[in-house]
Amino acid sequence: MSAASGVPPFMAAWLEAQQAFARLAGAALATTPAASAAPQSFVEPYRQLFTMPAFPAAGVNTSGPDASMRRYQQAAERVGKLLNEAAADAGRRLGTALADDGPDAVPITSLRELQALWIDCGEAAWSAAAHREEFAQAQAELLAAWVALRVAAESR
Amino acid sequence: MTRLALDPARVAAEMAEFTSRMALAMQQLATMDVQPEGCSARAEVHRVDKTVLWRYARTAPDAALPPLVICYALVNRPYMLDLQPDRSLIRGLLARGLDVYLVDWGYPDRDDCALSLDDYVNRYLGACIDHVCREHGIPSVNLLGVCQGGTMAICYAALHPERVRNLVTMVTPVDFHTDDNLLSKWAQKLDVDGIVDALGNVPGELLNAAFVALMPLRLTMRKYAGLADIAHDRGALENFLRMERWIQDSPDQAGTAFRQFMRDFFQENRLVRGGLEIGGRAVDPRRINCPVLNVFAKQDHLVPPSASRPLAGLVSSSDYTPFEFDGGHIGIYVGRNAQELLPRTIAQWLQSR
Image (cartoon, rainbow over all chains, first blue to last red; front, side, top):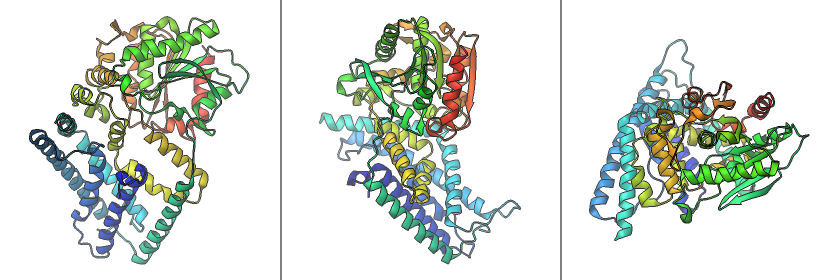
């Protein structure tokens, strides 16, 4: 479901987020009590949530002229690569946090606690990525490419 | 994964409870109809194009202070300041006997894409303040600028210092190039000319997406999952819905003004570095010598305190008061602890001048 299907934006956002966390919960349960879960299990939900707000809100006409379409695709790939890296970093942070066996490490016994940790690790990874100049440049280029694509499509 | 100690039966019960609560919350929200356009009695007293000046009805004996004109941001709608009876900065100010006016920029449309900062600061805000001065037979008002509206209020006060008796800024960006300002880091790389040339006005949805992207998990996942905790509390759900409607109620930005604001403030930081001009006139914050109260929020992710504090070094006023609020950019309007503290702080500060 998406905002485009008539669901109010906040509900659509929540539904997408909740689906992402449900996948994470499934991964966590699948690895309990075995301690063999790869942080990779946590990466995809992060990537999806990072992607949601990072791309321009309005739809892209994928049948746009070749040059502007290529530019957009390249820009999207570049941003996508950075989002993947951020998601991988978030997964690593979560994996590290879950593996913490120090004296201050509190056992996680509920999904609520797991979700809180998941969000904190995700935000930390996101912040580290988003503050980088490379990220700002990639995001700006994506927006510029989207604008150019739209202009080119309208002028046809 | 030594910390994971999930018991499948407990997790299943937790999921079932969560799902049930979320279903209830969604069901309740679907039947609710909140009216978020402000809750206090007010009347339109002046209008220039789409800009409306509202005057709020008094609710307490007159504090005998010059009227307070509130200049809100161009981004989002000003009813955040009067969201509901128990979450209203404006009500708090009225309760302390202040005569409150609010500048409402309306919703720019295609006819407005050529509106510039000169229009907003000098023509619209200027006309509103002139109206208040004329109606009250006074030379100057107390001016409260909020967020971007605070930046505009600073510009107005620098250009027309004779019209501002006291200046209050709230969560106002001044230095746009501080290291912790993520929004500014992103904005500095934008091809603003390309965006405005192509789009004319800038869609509010685009700005909303950028704001959510600042903290994508907290502002989606945490917030919406929190609905489960208030599923049985109709009042809390109404508060939630009111807030969501405000967030989504995001006016488009007039292209020319957006271009100027992005370039002059976000990208070139001219308020701090110098060289800012509006309407062909230099904006020199050193011309501000009236008393200044600068309110900023300690946990503000949109306008970090580091962006607001430098106002102290820009104005020439010898009467400068910083006030740090323990909360975030939204909490400063609707947070429980803000409801008493903020209006009292502002009113007392004004009364003592």
